[in-house]
Each structure stands twice: as C-alpha cells, then as structure tokens.
Image 1 (cartoon, rainbow, N blue to C red):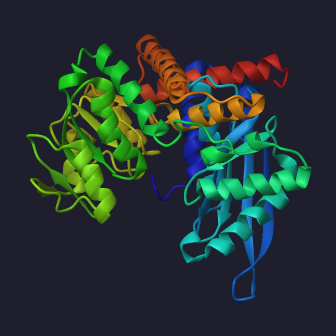
Image 2 (image 1 turned 180 degrees about the vertical axis):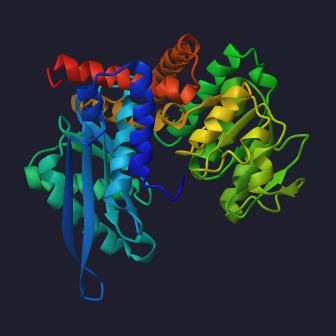
Image 3 (image 1 turned 120 degrees about the horizontal axis):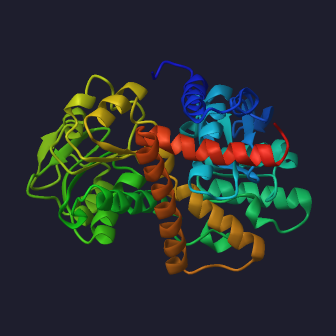
Length: 416
C-alpha cells in the first residue's frame, strides 16, 4: 500500500463509503476530486546569494461546509498527490468532528533540515506572497504540519497582514500564543485521542483506570498520550514505548512522566532505567488493553494484524492500519479508533483558535479542554452508532458519517 499513490488510496476509501451509503453518481464523482488546486514556483534568495526555485502547492478540496482548513508541509518528497490526499482526509476529518470547515492542505518541496532560519523565513514569506489571494478566514486557513512550526506560521501571518494592510490573525492557526495562538493546542491531538479511548472503553466494558497500554512512536503525540492516559482515565499501566531507534518494556509498568523526561533529555527511549529492550514490531503484538500507534503509516498490515492482542487501537498517527488489516481486526473483535477521528483534536483546537481570533476574545485552558471533550465525545458516538447500525468496521463508519455530512451540504447548496 505504501507504494501506491496516496490520492488513489483516498479515492478508494471514499468509493467504499459511497457504495455503502448508496450515494448518487454525481455527488460521488464531485467528492472524488478537489474543487480547486494551485501550483506555484517560489524564487528564494539563499544565504550564499544564489536564488533557488521552490515548487509549492495548495489544494482546497471541498468548501461545502465552510472555509477550507489544513496544514502546510515542508518535505523533500512533497508532491501534488500527497497534498490532494491529505486535503481529502482533512475534509472528512473536519466533517466527522462536525466543525463548520472544509478540507485543504499545502506543501512545499524542500528540505528544511538543510535551511538556515533566515532561508526558512524568506520561504515562509515567499509562499505567502504567492498564495495570499486564495487565503482568508472565510476562504482557506493554513496551519503547521510536517517540518513547519509556530514560528513559521508567525512569519506567514505577518506577511499576509503586510499584504492586506489589516490585522488578520485568523488567516493562520498554530501560531505562538503571544500573537493569537490558542491555549491547549500543544497536546490537542493526543488529548482528543484519549477522550475517544475513554468513550470506547465504556462501550466495550473495559475499566480504563486499570487498563494496560503501549505506545509506538514517541514524538509529540506519543509523549502526551503517555501522561494524558493516566490523567484523563484516572489510572492505567504503561508497559512499553518505542521510537524510531527502538523500544523499552516493563510488564510491571513504566512511569509515564519519567520516560517522557528521559526522551526529551536523551533524544531516545532506549536505555531507560528498569526496562528491557523491545522492537517496534514486537511492541505492536504485546498483550495490552490499549495500543496507540503514534508513528508511521502502514505498520499494522495483513501480515501482523492477526497477532495484535490489544482490545482498543487508537490511531494517533495518520494511516497506521492498511485496509486489509482493518478487516482482520474487525473480524477478531478489536475496536480500531480510526486516525481521522482519533487524531482530530489538533484541527478541532485549530478551529477554536480561528474562532477566538475572529471575535478577538480568548478562552481559558479549561474552556478549550471542555469544548474539545464535547466535540470528540460526540464524534465517537456518531461513528460508533453508525458502526452498530451498518455492521461495518469503525473506519468505514467514520467515512460514512463524514461523507454523509459533506454530501448533504453539497446538495443543499444545489451543487448536485
């Protein structure tokens, strides 16, 4: 699957939901393609005086439910097809958590690891200069994604305001708090995922406060999941964590805060005191109640799905489970909390940031958490009820919820 065009995968997932929903051909065809897509060439002066031409993209997939919303990725392998696929998934993600936004995505083909801060700032401002006319709080709102940061968002917002001559903080989300960012954005992806685990545990009669859990991938989302699991669920036992260099395990439990501190200080989890090594592959097959895949796509496949023992699988990463593995897990009675529902906390708090920017009034951290909890709980219940009614796995149920909402908006507008 990983070698397939990501946009073809996105279309296939939509096709399956459209078939199950009995979607009419015109609506189905409309939803298979982006409404608008833009390609840009952006000339930037490098520190050595040379000018380099960067290729950049912005895709506005569907705006039936509101302004398009989605991250901006800087990556050497970025292509129009990855951006199209991610814009499609953002459309369904915003719809499944029922926020009044459509899906968008942007990308620049570059390697930020080889760029100085000055070069990054010139690229951020250069990208904004070419894309600005297509953006706006009521049109399309970018956010940080792979290798883009709150600082890059700050430069882009500043450039946009210079172009339009007004204050427009809501044109970009994921900004530093000092210039209009929202409280609660840092841990939002993991927090939303743990809220969903809490609701799912209730449905399957799992005592979450006593549940064992393991985390594959120990970046931002994985680290926050480690500590939030015990905070939100009132307990639980972390038995294993891993990152790209390897993993550690202790069946009697690992202190979540201590292992996060160790990772931040050393850059790895290997060698954490009181644990034994475990590979990423073996971690997935541990006998735990809850598994958090929080690293790469395509790590649960038809080859290993039958060996997964976790009752709940909460996808904090994008696309960790292949379509064939979904079927195997579903038949084995495992509950998979699909990525575009489970990790939608990030875009939900980005939406809150946009709202706060627009009416120039900022919420407390408690308000953000309360609103996020409500949105994630409602999303889970809508998807779980569809799963029960339609007798399908959770990913297909999530697609059915999202596609129904977007299709209804398209029809009400008279597009189809």
